[in-house]
Image (cartoon, rainbow, N blue to C red):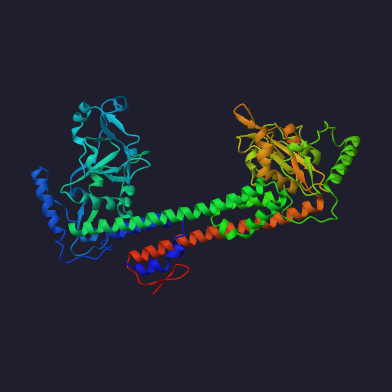
Length: 583
Protein backbone atom coordinates (compact mmCIF):
# COMPACT_ATOMS: atom_id res chain seq x y z
CA UNK A 1 0.00 0.00 0.00
CA UNK A 2 1.36 3.42 -1.00
CA UNK A 3 -0.18 5.44 1.86
CA UNK A 4 1.91 8.55 1.08
CA UNK A 5 0.30 8.84 -2.35
CA UNK A 6 -3.15 8.67 -0.79
CA UNK A 7 -2.37 11.21 1.92
CA UNK A 8 -0.75 13.69 -0.49
CA UNK A 9 -4.03 14.03 -2.39
CA UNK A 10 -6.41 13.55 0.54
CA UNK A 11 -7.57 17.17 0.85
CA UNK A 12 -8.74 17.22 -2.75
CA UNK A 13 -10.26 13.76 -2.96
CA UNK A 14 -12.13 14.08 0.35
CA UNK A 15 -14.42 16.64 -1.33
CA UNK A 16 -15.60 14.08 -3.89
CA UNK A 17 -19.26 13.18 -3.15
CA UNK A 18 -18.50 9.45 -2.98
CA UNK A 19 -15.09 9.81 -1.29
CA UNK A 20 -16.02 8.12 1.99
CA UNK A 21 -17.82 5.16 0.44
CA UNK A 22 -14.94 4.59 -1.96
CA UNK A 23 -12.41 4.88 0.85
CA UNK A 24 -14.32 2.19 2.74
CA UNK A 25 -14.18 -0.07 -0.30
CA UNK A 26 -10.48 0.73 -0.70
CA UNK A 27 -9.76 -0.33 2.89
CA UNK A 28 -11.62 -3.61 2.41
CA UNK A 29 -9.83 -4.29 -0.86
CA UNK A 30 -6.47 -3.75 0.83
CA UNK A 31 -7.55 -6.09 3.62
CA UNK A 32 -8.51 -9.03 1.40
CA UNK A 33 -5.34 -8.67 -0.71
CA UNK A 34 -2.93 -8.79 2.24
CA UNK A 35 -1.90 -5.14 1.84
CA UNK A 36 -3.51 -3.54 4.88
CA UNK A 37 -1.07 -4.78 7.52
CA UNK A 38 2.36 -6.35 7.55
CA UNK A 39 2.64 -10.14 7.60
CA UNK A 40 4.26 -11.85 10.61
CA UNK A 41 6.59 -14.74 9.85
CA UNK A 42 5.68 -16.30 13.22
CA UNK A 43 2.05 -16.85 12.16
CA UNK A 44 1.04 -20.41 11.39
CA UNK A 45 0.40 -20.48 7.62
CA UNK A 46 -3.15 -20.55 6.35
CA UNK A 47 -2.58 -24.10 5.09
CA UNK A 48 -2.95 -25.30 8.68
CA UNK A 49 -6.49 -23.89 8.71
CA UNK A 50 -7.35 -26.11 5.76
CA UNK A 51 -6.42 -29.17 7.84
CA UNK A 52 -8.74 -28.05 10.65
CA UNK A 53 -11.56 -27.36 8.19
CA UNK A 54 -11.22 -30.82 6.68
CA UNK A 55 -11.17 -32.46 10.10
CA UNK A 56 -14.30 -30.60 11.24
CA UNK A 57 -16.14 -31.44 8.04
CA UNK A 58 -15.22 -35.07 8.53
CA UNK A 59 -16.75 -35.05 12.00
CA UNK A 60 -19.93 -33.60 10.53
CA UNK A 61 -20.07 -36.17 7.77
CA UNK A 62 -19.52 -33.54 5.05
CA UNK A 63 -17.19 -34.20 2.07
CA UNK A 64 -13.93 -32.52 2.98
CA UNK A 65 -12.12 -32.34 -0.34
CA UNK A 66 -10.99 -28.81 -1.21
CA UNK A 67 -10.19 -27.45 -4.65
CA UNK A 68 -6.97 -25.51 -4.88
CA UNK A 69 -7.32 -22.75 -7.44
CA UNK A 70 -4.87 -22.95 -10.36
CA UNK A 71 -2.37 -20.11 -10.63
CA UNK A 72 -3.84 -18.78 -13.88
CA UNK A 73 -7.31 -18.52 -12.28
CA UNK A 74 -6.23 -16.60 -9.17
CA UNK A 75 -7.66 -13.06 -9.23
CA UNK A 76 -4.55 -11.41 -7.72
CA UNK A 77 -1.28 -12.16 -5.96
CA UNK A 78 -1.34 -12.88 -2.23
CA UNK A 79 1.32 -13.17 0.50
CA UNK A 80 3.19 -16.50 0.63
CA UNK A 81 1.55 -17.73 3.85
CA UNK A 82 -2.00 -17.22 2.44
CA UNK A 83 -3.93 -19.74 0.33
CA UNK A 84 -6.62 -19.57 -2.33
CA UNK A 85 -9.79 -21.63 -1.76
CA UNK A 86 -13.36 -21.65 -3.02
CA UNK A 87 -15.91 -20.18 -0.58
CA UNK A 88 -17.80 -23.48 -0.33
CA UNK A 89 -14.63 -25.31 0.75
CA UNK A 90 -14.38 -23.10 3.87
CA UNK A 91 -17.92 -23.81 5.00
CA UNK A 92 -19.93 -26.54 6.62
CA UNK A 93 -23.12 -25.03 5.18
CA UNK A 94 -24.02 -22.62 2.39
CA UNK A 95 -27.30 -21.94 0.64
CA UNK A 96 -30.51 -20.00 0.89
CA UNK A 97 -33.13 -20.15 3.62
CA UNK A 98 -36.65 -21.39 2.99
CA UNK A 99 -40.27 -20.25 2.94
CA UNK A 100 -42.64 -21.59 5.58
CA UNK A 101 -45.62 -23.45 4.19
CA UNK A 102 -48.42 -20.91 3.90
CA UNK A 103 -46.04 -17.97 3.33
CA UNK A 104 -46.93 -14.69 5.02
CA UNK A 105 -50.17 -16.15 6.33
CA UNK A 106 -48.24 -18.06 9.02
CA UNK A 107 -46.42 -15.01 10.40
CA UNK A 108 -47.08 -14.33 14.09
CA UNK A 109 -46.78 -11.30 16.38
CA UNK A 110 -44.20 -13.16 18.44
CA UNK A 111 -42.37 -16.46 18.46
CA UNK A 112 -39.20 -17.44 16.57
CA UNK A 113 -37.68 -14.57 14.50
CA UNK A 114 -37.96 -15.23 10.76
CA UNK A 115 -35.31 -13.06 9.13
CA UNK A 116 -35.84 -11.60 5.67
CA UNK A 117 -33.69 -9.49 3.37
CA UNK A 118 -34.96 -6.22 4.93
CA UNK A 119 -33.53 -7.36 8.26
CA UNK A 120 -30.02 -7.93 6.89
CA UNK A 121 -27.77 -4.85 6.78
CA UNK A 122 -24.01 -4.51 6.58
CA UNK A 123 -23.80 -3.09 10.10
CA UNK A 124 -25.91 -5.86 11.64
CA UNK A 125 -29.45 -7.19 11.93
CA UNK A 126 -32.33 -4.72 12.14
CA UNK A 127 -35.30 -6.27 13.89
CA UNK A 128 -37.79 -3.38 13.82
CA UNK A 129 -39.60 -5.06 10.91
CA UNK A 130 -39.01 -8.70 11.79
CA UNK A 131 -41.57 -11.44 11.17
CA UNK A 132 -42.15 -14.34 13.57
CA UNK A 133 -43.09 -17.98 13.11
CA UNK A 134 -44.21 -20.59 15.64
CA UNK A 135 -41.78 -23.03 17.24
CA UNK A 136 -43.52 -25.86 15.38
CA UNK A 137 -42.95 -24.16 12.02
CA UNK A 138 -39.35 -23.45 12.98
CA UNK A 139 -38.78 -27.15 13.80
CA UNK A 140 -40.17 -28.14 10.42
CA UNK A 141 -37.60 -25.80 8.85
CA UNK A 142 -34.69 -27.09 10.89
CA UNK A 143 -32.44 -27.23 7.83
CA UNK A 144 -32.37 -23.42 7.71
CA UNK A 145 -32.19 -22.74 11.45
CA UNK A 146 -29.49 -20.18 12.27
CA UNK A 147 -26.49 -20.46 14.52
CA UNK A 148 -24.52 -17.62 16.16
CA UNK A 149 -21.62 -16.65 13.90
CA UNK A 150 -23.43 -17.49 10.67
CA UNK A 151 -23.00 -14.96 7.90
CA UNK A 152 -26.25 -13.90 6.25
CA UNK A 153 -25.98 -12.69 2.64
CA UNK A 154 -28.87 -11.18 0.68
CA UNK A 155 -28.93 -12.98 -2.66
CA UNK A 156 -31.88 -11.40 -4.51
CA UNK A 157 -33.36 -8.03 -5.35
CA UNK A 158 -32.16 -4.50 -4.78
CA UNK A 159 -30.40 -5.34 -1.50
CA UNK A 160 -28.33 -8.16 -3.01
CA UNK A 161 -24.87 -8.26 -1.45
CA UNK A 162 -25.79 -6.93 1.99
CA UNK A 163 -24.24 -9.12 4.68
CA UNK A 164 -24.10 -9.38 8.47
CA UNK A 165 -23.13 -11.79 11.25
CA UNK A 166 -25.78 -13.54 13.35
CA UNK A 167 -25.15 -12.29 16.92
CA UNK A 168 -24.74 -14.63 19.88
CA UNK A 169 -27.82 -13.47 21.82
CA UNK A 170 -30.50 -13.82 19.17
CA UNK A 171 -31.72 -17.29 20.23
CA UNK A 172 -33.60 -19.62 17.85
CA UNK A 173 -34.13 -18.01 14.44
CA UNK A 174 -34.78 -18.92 10.82
CA UNK A 175 -34.27 -17.23 7.48
CA UNK A 176 -36.13 -16.72 4.21
CA UNK A 177 -35.20 -17.97 0.75
CA UNK A 178 -33.93 -14.51 -0.25
CA UNK A 179 -31.04 -14.77 2.22
CA UNK A 180 -28.13 -17.22 2.08
CA UNK A 181 -26.50 -18.81 5.11
CA UNK A 182 -22.69 -18.97 5.07
CA UNK A 183 -21.53 -21.13 7.97
CA UNK A 184 -17.76 -21.41 8.31
CA UNK A 185 -16.59 -24.88 9.30
CA UNK A 186 -14.34 -23.75 12.18
CA UNK A 187 -14.88 -21.03 14.76
CA UNK A 188 -13.06 -17.69 14.77
CA UNK A 189 -13.21 -16.78 11.08
CA UNK A 190 -16.62 -15.09 10.71
CA UNK A 191 -15.33 -11.65 11.67
CA UNK A 192 -12.77 -11.81 8.84
CA UNK A 193 -15.15 -13.30 6.28
CA UNK A 194 -17.67 -10.52 6.92
CA UNK A 195 -15.47 -7.65 5.59
CA UNK A 196 -14.27 -9.98 2.84
CA UNK A 197 -17.86 -10.46 1.64
CA UNK A 198 -18.41 -6.67 1.80
CA UNK A 199 -15.23 -5.91 -0.19
CA UNK A 200 -15.57 -4.62 -3.76
CA UNK A 201 -13.70 -7.74 -4.89
CA UNK A 202 -16.30 -10.16 -3.49
CA UNK A 203 -19.27 -7.91 -4.28
CA UNK A 204 -18.27 -7.85 -7.94
CA UNK A 205 -18.70 -11.64 -7.98
CA UNK A 206 -22.09 -11.39 -6.28
CA UNK A 207 -23.37 -8.89 -8.84
CA UNK A 208 -21.81 -10.56 -11.89
CA UNK A 209 -23.06 -14.03 -10.92
CA UNK A 210 -26.72 -13.04 -10.69
CA UNK A 211 -29.09 -15.18 -12.73
CA UNK A 212 -32.79 -15.08 -13.48
CA UNK A 213 -35.06 -12.52 -15.09
CA UNK A 214 -36.47 -9.58 -13.15
CA UNK A 215 -35.49 -10.35 -9.56
CA UNK A 216 -31.94 -11.61 -10.05
CA UNK A 217 -30.44 -14.07 -7.62
CA UNK A 218 -27.11 -15.68 -6.69
CA UNK A 219 -27.44 -19.48 -6.83
CA UNK A 220 -25.61 -21.71 -4.35
CA UNK A 221 -23.45 -23.47 -6.94
CA UNK A 222 -22.05 -20.13 -8.12
CA UNK A 223 -21.65 -18.66 -4.67
CA UNK A 224 -19.71 -21.73 -3.51
CA UNK A 225 -17.15 -21.25 -6.31
CA UNK A 226 -16.21 -17.65 -5.52
CA UNK A 227 -12.41 -17.59 -4.87
CA UNK A 228 -11.36 -16.51 -1.38
CA UNK A 229 -7.84 -15.49 -0.36
CA UNK A 230 -7.39 -16.90 3.15
CA UNK A 231 -4.77 -15.49 5.57
CA UNK A 232 -3.49 -17.19 8.73
CA UNK A 233 -5.95 -16.99 11.63
CA UNK A 234 -3.73 -14.64 13.66
CA UNK A 235 -3.43 -12.29 10.71
CA UNK A 236 -7.20 -12.42 10.20
CA UNK A 237 -7.64 -11.10 13.74
CA UNK A 238 -5.15 -8.30 13.15
CA UNK A 239 -6.83 -7.40 9.84
CA UNK A 240 -10.24 -7.21 11.55
CA UNK A 241 -8.84 -4.91 14.24
CA UNK A 242 -7.27 -2.64 11.63
CA UNK A 243 -10.44 -2.56 9.52
CA UNK A 244 -12.48 -1.62 12.59
CA UNK A 245 -10.03 1.19 13.39
CA UNK A 246 -10.06 2.58 9.85
CA UNK A 247 -13.83 2.29 9.49
CA UNK A 248 -14.19 4.34 12.68
CA UNK A 249 -12.04 7.02 11.02
CA UNK A 250 -14.25 6.82 7.92
CA UNK A 251 -17.27 7.34 10.18
CA UNK A 252 -15.64 10.51 11.52
CA UNK A 253 -14.87 11.71 7.99
CA UNK A 254 -18.46 10.93 6.94
CA UNK A 255 -19.85 12.96 9.83
CA UNK A 256 -17.46 15.84 9.12
CA UNK A 257 -18.39 15.84 5.43
CA UNK A 258 -22.10 15.74 6.30
CA UNK A 259 -21.68 18.59 8.80
CA UNK A 260 -19.75 20.68 6.27
CA UNK A 261 -22.38 20.21 3.56
CA UNK A 262 -25.23 20.82 6.00
CA UNK A 263 -23.67 24.11 7.08
CA UNK A 264 -23.21 25.22 3.49
CA UNK A 265 -26.80 24.33 2.68
CA UNK A 266 -28.10 26.03 5.83
CA UNK A 267 -26.06 29.14 5.04
CA UNK A 268 -27.57 29.35 1.58
CA UNK A 269 -31.10 28.61 2.79
CA UNK A 270 -30.82 31.19 5.58
CA UNK A 271 -29.67 33.92 3.20
CA UNK A 272 -32.42 33.02 0.73
CA UNK A 273 -35.02 33.08 3.51
CA UNK A 274 -33.89 36.54 4.56
CA UNK A 275 -34.06 37.80 0.97
CA UNK A 276 -37.50 36.31 0.35
CA UNK A 277 -39.13 37.10 3.70
CA UNK A 278 -37.43 40.22 5.01
CA UNK A 279 -39.65 43.25 5.60
CA UNK A 280 -36.90 45.86 5.76
CA UNK A 281 -35.50 46.98 2.38
CA UNK A 282 -32.02 47.66 3.77
CA UNK A 283 -31.96 44.25 5.48
CA UNK A 284 -32.93 42.51 2.24
CA UNK A 285 -30.27 44.43 0.32
CA UNK A 286 -27.67 43.55 2.97
CA UNK A 287 -28.44 39.83 2.88
CA UNK A 288 -28.54 39.88 -0.90
CA UNK A 289 -25.06 41.39 -1.04
CA UNK A 290 -23.87 38.84 1.54
CA UNK A 291 -25.25 35.96 -0.49
CA UNK A 292 -23.75 37.09 -3.79
CA UNK A 293 -20.36 37.89 -2.23
CA UNK A 294 -20.06 34.44 -0.62
CA UNK A 295 -20.85 32.29 -3.63
CA UNK A 296 -17.75 30.17 -3.13
CA UNK A 297 -18.85 29.23 0.38
CA UNK A 298 -22.59 29.04 -0.20
CA UNK A 299 -22.84 27.42 -3.60
CA UNK A 300 -20.05 24.89 -3.45
CA UNK A 301 -22.17 21.99 -4.69
CA UNK A 302 -24.17 21.98 -7.96
CA UNK A 303 -27.36 21.05 -6.12
CA UNK A 304 -27.12 24.35 -4.20
CA UNK A 305 -27.23 26.47 -7.36
CA UNK A 306 -31.05 26.50 -7.65
CA UNK A 307 -31.03 28.45 -4.35
CA UNK A 308 -28.68 30.98 -5.91
CA UNK A 309 -30.84 31.35 -9.03
CA UNK A 310 -33.93 31.88 -6.88
CA UNK A 311 -32.10 34.48 -4.80
CA UNK A 312 -31.14 36.39 -7.94
CA UNK A 313 -34.80 36.48 -9.00
CA UNK A 314 -35.87 37.57 -5.51
CA UNK A 315 -33.40 40.45 -5.51
CA UNK A 316 -34.48 41.41 -9.03
CA UNK A 317 -38.20 41.77 -8.27
CA UNK A 318 -37.60 43.64 -4.99
CA UNK A 319 -35.51 46.36 -6.62
CA UNK A 320 -32.27 45.22 -4.99
CA UNK A 321 -30.38 43.88 -8.00
CA UNK A 322 -29.76 47.14 -9.91
CA UNK A 323 -29.92 50.72 -8.61
CA UNK A 324 -32.91 52.96 -9.31
CA UNK A 325 -32.42 55.96 -11.58
CA UNK A 326 -34.28 59.15 -10.52
CA UNK A 327 -35.09 60.16 -14.13
CA UNK A 328 -36.96 56.94 -14.98
CA UNK A 329 -40.68 57.34 -15.66
CA UNK A 330 -42.53 55.81 -12.65
CA UNK A 331 -44.40 52.57 -13.19
CA UNK A 332 -47.71 54.20 -12.25
CA UNK A 333 -47.40 56.31 -15.41
CA UNK A 334 -46.69 53.18 -17.45
CA UNK A 335 -49.93 51.63 -16.24
CA UNK A 336 -51.86 54.75 -17.30
CA UNK A 337 -50.28 54.64 -20.76
CA UNK A 338 -51.05 50.92 -21.08
CA UNK A 339 -54.70 51.63 -20.29
CA UNK A 340 -54.82 54.41 -22.88
CA UNK A 341 -53.34 52.08 -25.49
CA UNK A 342 -55.79 49.31 -24.59
CA UNK A 343 -58.72 51.69 -24.97
CA UNK A 344 -57.48 52.73 -28.40
CA UNK A 345 -57.10 49.09 -29.51
CA UNK A 346 -60.61 48.22 -28.29
CA UNK A 347 -62.07 51.11 -30.31
CA UNK A 348 -60.31 50.02 -33.47
CA UNK A 349 -61.39 46.40 -32.90
CA UNK A 350 -57.94 44.80 -32.47
CA UNK A 351 -58.67 43.99 -28.78
CA UNK A 352 -61.83 42.86 -27.04
CA UNK A 353 -63.04 44.81 -24.04
CA UNK A 354 -62.18 43.24 -20.69
CA UNK A 355 -63.84 43.50 -17.30
CA UNK A 356 -62.10 46.14 -15.15
CA UNK A 357 -59.74 44.81 -12.49
CA UNK A 358 -60.05 45.73 -8.82
CA UNK A 359 -57.54 47.92 -7.01
CA UNK A 360 -54.89 46.01 -5.05
CA UNK A 361 -55.50 46.25 -1.27
CA UNK A 362 -52.43 47.08 0.80
CA UNK A 363 -52.71 43.84 2.78
CA UNK A 364 -52.35 41.80 -0.44
CA UNK A 365 -49.02 43.36 -1.39
CA UNK A 366 -46.29 40.81 -0.48
CA UNK A 367 -43.49 43.32 0.24
CA UNK A 368 -42.48 46.99 0.05
CA UNK A 369 -41.30 48.30 -3.33
CA UNK A 370 -39.00 51.17 -4.31
CA UNK A 371 -40.81 54.49 -4.78
CA UNK A 372 -40.79 54.43 -8.59
CA UNK A 373 -42.33 50.92 -8.72
CA UNK A 374 -45.96 49.84 -8.49
CA UNK A 375 -47.80 46.61 -7.76
CA UNK A 376 -49.82 45.70 -10.84
CA UNK A 377 -52.23 42.97 -11.81
CA UNK A 378 -50.99 40.88 -14.71
CA UNK A 379 -54.19 41.61 -16.60
CA UNK A 380 -53.49 45.35 -16.30
CA UNK A 381 -49.99 44.89 -17.77
CA UNK A 382 -50.91 42.51 -20.57
CA UNK A 383 -52.29 43.35 -23.98
CA UNK A 384 -54.43 40.22 -23.65
CA UNK A 385 -54.66 36.58 -22.53
CA UNK A 386 -55.68 33.61 -24.72
CA UNK A 387 -56.23 29.91 -24.10
CA UNK A 388 -54.57 27.63 -26.64
CA UNK A 389 -56.22 25.44 -29.24
CA UNK A 390 -58.26 22.40 -28.21
CA UNK A 391 -57.95 20.86 -31.69
CA UNK A 392 -56.27 17.47 -31.37
CA UNK A 393 -52.72 17.53 -32.71
CA UNK A 394 -51.12 14.61 -34.47
CA UNK A 395 -47.90 13.52 -36.15
CA UNK A 396 -48.71 14.90 -39.57
CA UNK A 397 -46.16 15.91 -42.16
CA UNK A 398 -47.43 19.38 -43.06
CA UNK A 399 -49.02 21.59 -40.45
CA UNK A 400 -48.39 23.95 -37.57
CA UNK A 401 -46.40 22.62 -34.57
CA UNK A 402 -48.30 22.73 -31.27
CA UNK A 403 -46.37 23.56 -28.11
CA UNK A 404 -47.40 21.57 -25.03
CA UNK A 405 -46.84 21.99 -21.31
CA UNK A 406 -43.76 19.74 -21.47
CA UNK A 407 -42.13 22.35 -23.69
CA UNK A 408 -42.15 24.93 -20.85
CA UNK A 409 -38.91 24.33 -18.96
CA UNK A 410 -36.90 26.54 -16.59
CA UNK A 411 -38.49 29.78 -17.80
CA UNK A 412 -37.91 28.90 -21.45
CA UNK A 413 -40.02 27.53 -24.29
CA UNK A 414 -38.38 24.53 -25.95
CA UNK A 415 -39.37 24.48 -29.62
CA UNK A 416 -40.35 21.13 -31.10
CA UNK A 417 -42.05 19.81 -34.22
CA UNK A 418 -43.43 16.54 -32.88
CA UNK A 419 -47.20 17.13 -33.17
CA UNK A 420 -49.05 19.48 -35.49
CA UNK A 421 -52.49 20.73 -36.45
CA UNK A 422 -53.74 21.57 -39.92
CA UNK A 423 -53.17 25.17 -41.01
CA UNK A 424 -56.86 25.51 -41.91
CA UNK A 425 -58.23 25.15 -38.35
CA UNK A 426 -60.57 27.88 -37.10
CA UNK A 427 -58.17 28.93 -34.27
CA UNK A 428 -55.58 30.12 -36.78
CA UNK A 429 -54.26 32.69 -37.44
CA UNK A 430 -55.62 34.06 -34.10
CA UNK A 431 -53.56 31.60 -32.00
CA UNK A 432 -50.29 31.90 -33.89
CA UNK A 433 -47.46 32.80 -31.53
CA UNK A 434 -45.43 35.97 -31.94
CA UNK A 435 -41.87 36.38 -30.73
CA UNK A 436 -41.74 37.34 -26.98
CA UNK A 437 -45.19 35.91 -26.19
CA UNK A 438 -45.23 34.45 -22.67
CA UNK A 439 -46.78 31.00 -22.17
CA UNK A 440 -48.25 29.98 -18.81
CA UNK A 441 -49.11 26.39 -17.80
CA UNK A 442 -52.55 26.46 -16.19
CA UNK A 443 -53.12 22.77 -15.36
CA UNK A 444 -51.14 19.69 -14.37
CA UNK A 445 -49.76 18.37 -11.10
CA UNK A 446 -49.59 21.12 -8.46
CA UNK A 447 -45.83 21.68 -8.73
CA UNK A 448 -46.06 22.21 -12.51
CA UNK A 449 -48.98 24.64 -12.55
CA UNK A 450 -47.66 28.16 -13.04
CA UNK A 451 -44.62 27.27 -15.14
CA UNK A 452 -43.89 30.02 -17.65
CA UNK A 453 -41.60 30.51 -20.59
CA UNK A 454 -40.84 33.09 -23.30
CA UNK A 455 -41.44 32.08 -26.92
CA UNK A 456 -38.39 33.07 -29.00
CA UNK A 457 -39.32 31.41 -32.29
CA UNK A 458 -40.42 33.01 -35.55
CA UNK A 459 -43.73 34.81 -35.82
CA UNK A 460 -46.68 32.70 -37.06
CA UNK A 461 -44.65 29.46 -36.99
CA UNK A 462 -46.10 27.79 -33.86
CA UNK A 463 -49.35 27.56 -31.96
CA UNK A 464 -50.04 26.19 -28.46
CA UNK A 465 -52.30 23.71 -26.69
CA UNK A 466 -55.38 24.54 -24.61
CA UNK A 467 -53.78 23.90 -21.22
CA UNK A 468 -51.42 26.79 -21.90
CA UNK A 469 -52.35 30.47 -21.74
CA UNK A 470 -50.67 33.10 -23.89
CA UNK A 471 -49.80 36.49 -22.42
CA UNK A 472 -48.93 39.24 -24.87
CA UNK A 473 -47.65 42.67 -23.80
CA UNK A 474 -47.17 46.19 -25.13
CA UNK A 475 -43.40 45.78 -25.19
CA UNK A 476 -42.76 49.53 -25.20
CA UNK A 477 -44.24 49.62 -21.69
CA UNK A 478 -43.65 46.13 -20.23
CA UNK A 479 -40.80 43.73 -20.92
CA UNK A 480 -42.16 40.18 -21.34
CA UNK A 481 -38.80 38.86 -20.15
CA UNK A 482 -39.11 40.90 -16.94
CA UNK A 483 -42.63 39.54 -16.36
CA UNK A 484 -41.26 36.03 -16.89
CA UNK A 485 -38.61 36.74 -14.24
CA UNK A 486 -41.27 38.01 -11.83
CA UNK A 487 -43.51 34.97 -12.40
CA UNK A 488 -40.59 32.62 -11.68
CA UNK A 489 -39.49 34.42 -8.51
CA UNK A 490 -40.15 32.58 -5.20
CA UNK A 491 -42.71 35.14 -3.96
CA UNK A 492 -44.96 34.52 -6.99
CA UNK A 493 -45.46 30.81 -6.43
CA UNK A 494 -45.87 31.31 -2.67
CA UNK A 495 -48.36 34.19 -2.77
CA UNK A 496 -50.01 34.00 -6.22
CA UNK A 497 -50.02 30.38 -7.44
CA UNK A 498 -50.32 28.18 -4.35
CA UNK A 499 -53.29 30.03 -2.76
CA UNK A 500 -55.22 29.72 -6.05
CA UNK A 501 -54.61 26.02 -6.78
CA UNK A 502 -57.80 24.02 -7.23
CA UNK A 503 -58.20 20.31 -8.04
CA UNK A 504 -60.28 19.50 -11.11
CA UNK A 505 -60.59 15.97 -12.52
CA UNK A 506 -57.56 14.84 -10.55
CA UNK A 507 -55.35 17.74 -11.69
CA UNK A 508 -54.49 21.10 -10.18
CA UNK A 509 -55.63 24.18 -12.06
CA UNK A 510 -55.23 27.96 -11.94
CA UNK A 511 -57.29 29.45 -14.76
CA UNK A 512 -56.96 32.56 -16.89
CA UNK A 513 -59.31 34.68 -14.80
CA UNK A 514 -57.19 34.07 -11.71
CA UNK A 515 -54.04 34.66 -13.71
CA UNK A 516 -55.24 38.13 -14.79
CA UNK A 517 -55.75 39.05 -11.12
CA UNK A 518 -52.31 37.92 -9.94
CA UNK A 519 -49.94 40.75 -9.03
CA UNK A 520 -46.34 41.48 -9.95
CA UNK A 521 -43.95 44.26 -8.85
CA UNK A 522 -43.62 46.59 -11.86
CA UNK A 523 -40.55 48.87 -12.23
CA UNK A 524 -40.11 51.66 -14.78
CA UNK A 525 -39.50 50.26 -18.28
CA UNK A 526 -35.86 51.42 -18.32
CA UNK A 527 -35.23 49.64 -15.02
CA UNK A 528 -37.04 46.53 -16.30
CA UNK A 529 -34.50 46.39 -19.11
CA UNK A 530 -31.56 46.89 -16.73
CA UNK A 531 -32.93 44.12 -14.48
CA UNK A 532 -33.32 41.74 -17.44
CA UNK A 533 -29.72 42.39 -18.53
CA UNK A 534 -28.38 41.88 -14.99
CA UNK A 535 -30.40 38.72 -14.39
CA UNK A 536 -29.23 37.25 -17.69
CA UNK A 537 -25.63 38.08 -16.76
CA UNK A 538 -25.91 36.45 -13.31
CA UNK A 539 -27.82 33.40 -14.53
CA UNK A 540 -25.13 32.91 -17.18
CA UNK A 541 -22.55 33.03 -14.38
CA UNK A 542 -24.59 30.44 -12.48
CA UNK A 543 -24.63 28.21 -15.55
CA UNK A 544 -20.86 28.60 -15.93
CA UNK A 545 -20.40 27.91 -12.22
CA UNK A 546 -22.50 24.77 -12.53
CA UNK A 547 -20.34 23.54 -15.40
CA UNK A 548 -17.18 24.26 -13.38
CA UNK A 549 -18.52 22.58 -10.24
CA UNK A 550 -19.60 19.48 -12.16
CA UNK A 551 -16.19 19.40 -13.84
CA UNK A 552 -14.52 19.74 -10.43
CA UNK A 553 -16.61 16.88 -9.07
CA UNK A 554 -15.63 14.73 -12.05
CA UNK A 555 -11.98 15.73 -11.56
CA UNK A 556 -12.07 14.75 -7.88
CA UNK A 557 -13.87 11.52 -8.76
CA UNK A 558 -11.22 10.68 -11.37
CA UNK A 559 -8.39 11.68 -9.03
CA UNK A 560 -9.85 9.55 -6.25
CA UNK A 561 -10.05 6.58 -8.62
CA UNK A 562 -6.48 7.10 -9.84
CA UNK A 563 -5.05 7.52 -6.34
CA UNK A 564 -6.89 4.49 -4.97
CA UNK A 565 -5.86 2.36 -7.92
CA UNK A 566 -2.17 3.23 -7.64
CA UNK A 567 -2.22 3.03 -3.85
CA UNK A 568 -3.88 -0.37 -4.02
CA UNK A 569 -1.32 -1.59 -6.51
CA UNK A 570 1.55 -0.15 -4.45
CA UNK A 571 2.52 2.16 -7.29
CA UNK A 572 5.08 4.86 -6.60
CA UNK A 573 4.34 6.69 -9.82
CA UNK A 574 3.41 10.34 -9.81
CA UNK A 575 -0.12 11.29 -10.83
CA UNK A 576 -0.49 14.48 -12.85
CA UNK A 577 -3.55 16.74 -12.89
CA UNK A 578 -4.91 14.95 -15.94
CA UNK A 579 -4.53 11.63 -14.07
CA UNK A 580 -1.94 10.30 -16.48
CA UNK A 581 0.65 8.22 -14.64
CA UNK A 582 4.19 9.51 -14.81
CA UNK A 583 7.03 7.04 -14.43
